[in-house]
Image 1 (cartoon, rainbow, N blue to C red):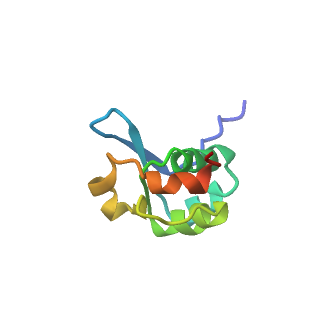
Image 2 (image 1 turned 45 degrees about the horizontal axis):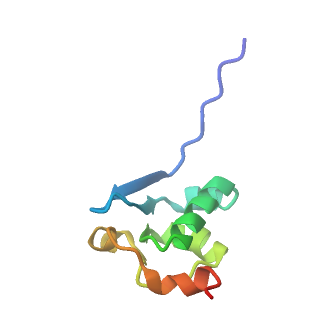
Length: 104
């Protein structure tokens, strides 16, 4: 009998709950994990959903290079380095909305 395959290590995704009960998104990863995430549709969708819902996104350099840049997600006041995430997380960034949906 073959031993069970060990699941690969995956980056840690963190959610912080703001005062309004909304979840905001932060990810910490390294270059190897970041490169792996370029092939992970669920991880890419996770970032696209957070961006589309105008939520705060915290990122590390590998996340910026391999996810945000690859998906074309522009840095704005709500897409910040992880060190700045805690100070912004409870907010939505409505200035982003015209970039993500057609408004009448």
